Structures are given as C-alpha cells and as structure tokens.
Length: 282
Image 1 (cartoon, one colour):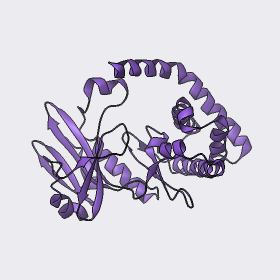
Image 2: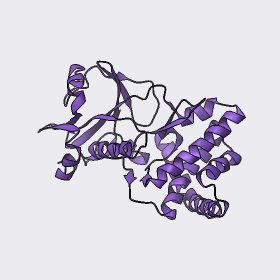
Image 3: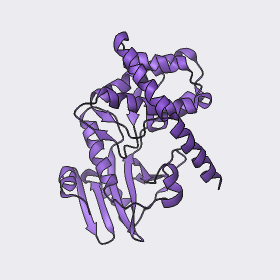
C-alpha cells in the first residue's frame, strides 16, 4: 500500500494509521489539534469550502489556533473529465509530504504539511493533503492581474527570477510551474516566495541545462497564453530571465533553449487546449 521506505522517511515527524479503509499520516505535534477539529481518516471534521482559487479544490480547517487548508487531489488536463478524484496510486500525498520536508530543510519556503490521507473508495483512492495556511499569502498570478505600477512589477519580477534560479540551483523541478502555484508575501517591501502544490515534483542532486530550460519553458507557455490577463509582455519576461541568469553569455544559451522548447511543444499544447475547452463546454 505505502512503501516501507516512505513510511520510514516520514516516521520521525508523522504518526501513521493503517486500516482497511485507508492510510492517515499526521504530524506528531499536531495530533491533538487535528483530532480536536474532527479531522480523521473517515471525516473532514469542521472543514469548509475555501474561497481560495486553484485547480484542486481547497477546504479551510481550523484546528485550535491553527489555520489549515485541505487540498483534494484531482487529475489534471483531459483526464480530470474522466477520472475526477479517483487514483490508482495511494502514495502521492505521502510522497509530497516527504518532498515538502526536504524543501523546508533546504531553506525553500513551502507550507508545512500537517497530514496526508488516502481513502479507499469504490476500488480506487481519494487523496488529500493538509497544510498550514500561509498568512498574507497571495498567488503570484493574482498579484500580476491587479498590480499595474511599473516600478513595483519590475522589482517583483526581478525578485521572482532570482528566486527561480535558487530553486533550480538546489535541484528542484516543479511539475506544474506557473504563477498560481507560487505565493508571495510582503510583496511591497521584502518579497518572500512560497511554493505550493508539489505533486509529482522532484528534488534532485542537480539539474541539467536541458531540465532548467524545459521547466522555464512550461512557465513561459503558461504566462504567454494568459499575457493579456496577467498584463505580462515580452519585456517583463526578459527582466525575469535576466535576474535568473545575470551572465549575458550564459543567458543567451538559456533563452535559446527555452525558446526552442516553447516552439517545439506549442502546436501540441494548442491541440490540448482546444480539446480541453471543448470538454469543459460539454
């Protein structure tokens, strides 16, 4: 059900409960608070729908003084119209909990995982992850949509590019890198960046230039598709790239690699976007 290596890796911080109905792992210092909220293997307790955006549904949960978020795992892309919340693999929230612990140890901000849950439902698995809510956190896409001050945008995009470089330098590849999966706090004075939704991401010893380019190309495709909504132009993308790679000679090769990746996959993504729009319409 859950690999012994995974339970061993999390065993120091989490207590596991195994039943025929599923698996629940709770951070040891949150056992009493989470139980008091009514959250468990068979219940969401006092969790209520959140007004926070995102593809995966979110619930808000108060556990004593702690403000928490419960994230439902759902399939992305076209699969979500067919399979919804049903998964064959129960390990994904526990793998994400382990990755979160590794990132925090590396000094990368990400909401601390409080609990991970996998429940058997009609021959498949429903998966959930409980994390602490980031006080004052705003997703970067929402910030880009509302902020029009040129100087503020320039400053934050430069900060974002430098932060992305540090992220890649520690060996992290986000499986779905885009502004909605990045939170920013203290944006006006001392921007602090937070990663969210780490599902299917990876932390490696190092990243190749090809891997960096592919990850950045994913981000560029997302932003460019929504450039009118986010008010982002080519100049702002270049500003973030300059902050990511300050050395001009190295930046040229990086930009070329990103551009080639974007161009090579654009036709495929356009076909996927068309199909997804039709599926959503139905």
